[in-house]
Image 1: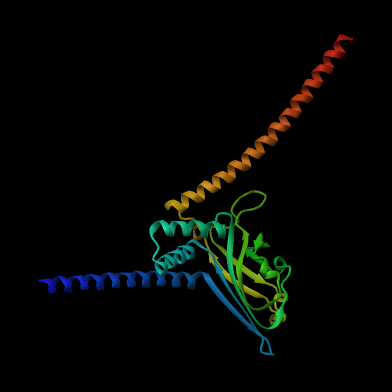
Image 2: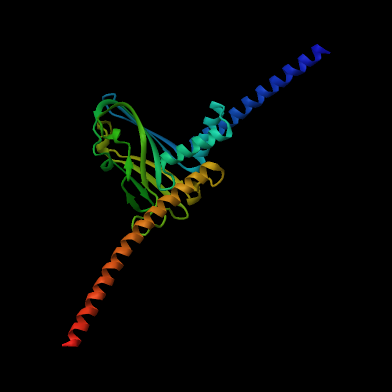
Length: 254
């Protein structure tokens, strides 16, 4: 009987191990599929053996979810640990405000000088051209070897606040030829075909609730500032009205 219980115990342990491996493999496969959809790699060579490579990964909802699930499986996180990681990750890449693109550059050859970096790279959204709003400042340093970081492009029109993505849009990331001596007269061009729903934020879980609270607090801060400014303007107008009425009363008494 003892041997039978012991055998059953080992069978359950083996089954649990196989389940964990299967789950980890599924998460890895989902992540790899997302990488193949949203990551692009371009490599350029000159006649002297120089190499300049660019990998650009667009942070879509599909990619972000695959990345987070893969990290959770690798690190054996609990549900709450995953939510914490999700909150910090989404907060850092600012997907609610921008179109973030993760860049991995590798310069093997003459040193690349890319400062100011926001003049070296831009994003075409349909037929509109946008410069980076923010970027990793290390891209401004002379480059030999590998460097990576996030570049943020606008997600909403600065004047109207409307989303800049249409129902179906081609995004074209361009690095000008001056980004690397290896490029010569060539430009780096990387394309993605996207839809607005590719960037829809997951609204479930505690991480989503915390991000929504952050967004509402920022909105409240902005509205409060606008209200204070309007109240100040109203006070000035009321003072001016009082002065005008006083002057009218004074003139009528003469």
